[in-house]
Amino acid sequence: MEKIRGILIGRMQPVHNGHIEVIKKTLEEVDEIIIGIGSAQKSHELKDPFTAGERVVMLNHALIENNIDSGSYYIIPMEDINFNAIWVAHVKMMTPPFSVVYSGNSLVKQLFYEEGFEVRNPPLYDRMNLSGTEIRKRMLKDENWQELVPQATIDVIKEINGVERLKNLAIKEISELGD
Figure 1: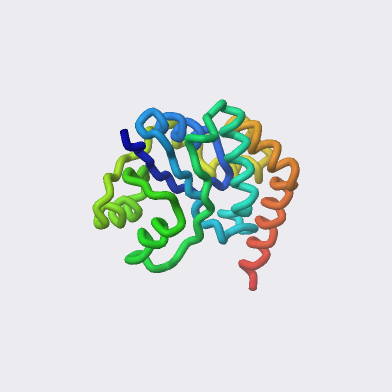
Figure 2: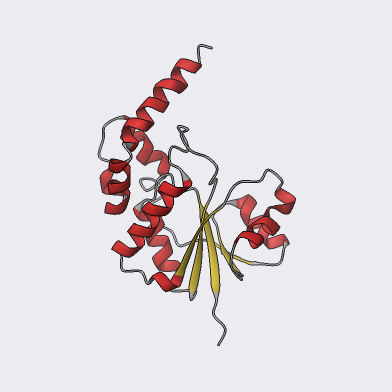
């Protein structure tokens, strides 16, 4: 029987418990999952503070921590290209073949749908609290962000002084408003 391979693309700034839940649930529907680390070229910005490499480590260690079989996923950093019409071709070129696309993003869904892919909504989770935006906000306010992420994310952020990085970026962006 042919393996069913799905793809899920997210910025993962940073990797959080919602991502892990979605990956686990998606693996109940497909044999293998390609996890695209979106906007891979971005880092050191308030909205995208972590490098693609840092996000790969967070995700890889979080999946190991959750006993997810390493033979069931591929983690692939994916840069943005600002041409919607050819983006699907770009994704296909960067990844193993896949037949099912998981995305909550209406543009992504439309682009893959137009290219004939089966498009599914990812499994739901607590999006109000489990979002990169909420986690970054809590980091800036010294609130408990750790409860929303796997231990692997905490470890990487500690190792790279990620909270300090984010706070420095916030100061920089506020000071630039006066320019």
